[in-house]
Image (cartoon, rainbow, N blue to C red):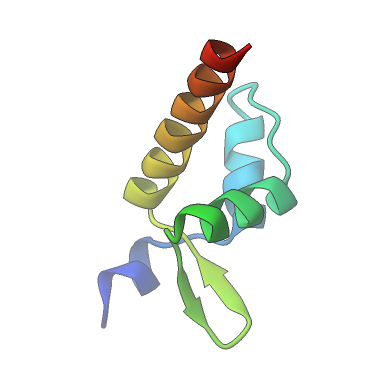
Length: 72
């Protein structure tokens, strides 16, 4: 069985997990960012993200915020 099936979580599950740590991120935002950077697994309509993909998602959103600050 592929690792992403056992290690991956839905955007809803990630949102709930992050919320328990005081970080409020909607499942919709996770889905949007994952699609933008191409970091997700999809089986039919099911989207799964591993912890490594979530880390890349946060890294890319941080660099996007920094580049936006530089342009101002």
